[in-house]
Length: 342
Ligand SMILES: *[C@@H]1O[C@H](CO)[C@@H](O)[C@H](O)[C@H]1NC(C)=O
Ligand SMILES: *[C@@H]1O[C@H](CO)[C@@H](O)[C@H](O)[C@H]1NC(C)=O
Image (cartoon, rainbow, N blue to C red):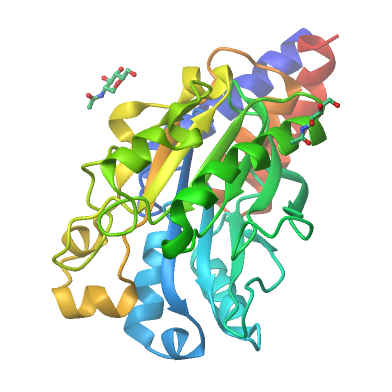
């Protein structure tokens, strides 16, 4: 039995080593198949007035797909299309270009007037399990133009285990009040999750330039409450146009997140520079850059059966669709499982 297990292990290791040298790295910064360690790249992107007209332009759709496939989890904001088909087209086009498919969690249409927006999370089920999601209920107080959209994930490959992403597109003219109220949204989530303090609050906060002064920002509850850490600096430029405003933000809460995010891989993603787009072509995509953060994986540190499965799925997905590789992996897991985790 031990011998069989050892042979199996050798086979898998050989397969992984061979694959890691041949696997394509075109899938983004976290190249699955080369050195997947369980890390996550998480983004938030306001795709200005996203709808049918945007997905109808091939070069815009292609650029959006290129941007989105960087991420393991990404919040999309400003979905305006009332037919609901544009976001589907975006997801389907994205999935037609990647092996490690995305799933979507979509909010209801939000807004006080007839101008409504939806939020969506695109995430990879191979890396994250969506446990539940909800739109923050503020019917009684009506603090938000577009109520935050909360999604609660299980993350078997990082030290966080479980965390929420709280996405929000703040109304510019009420930015300070909405910012303050995000603290309640957070407290409400902590209650709902039976005390989990880990959360990523992200989105277009409109918290800069003519909407929020430096003083107002400093005094806002989300900024002054020491439970929160703002990881996109006030001098960041998250706007595509000549203006230099730090509208799009990521704010973290919870010790597990503080410990596992990597500051030097956090910031705006300048897709125009990265993909050599001129200002007009970039502006057709959005007036915002995505903001993103990198969370370290812990697969190297802690091998639990739960952690190994998504890693192997990612490997086998990115390396080969052939059944034989999967078969070897599965056989190995079956044989090794009882030995390694009695
Ligand atoms: C969370 O629960 C505590 C204790 O039940 C309660 O006092 C508090 O008001 C709740 N917070 C929110 C925002 O619902
Ligand atoms: C980024 O920070 C990590 C520690 O958090 C360090 O190990 C790594 O070398 C840094 N990378 C760069 C490019 O500075």
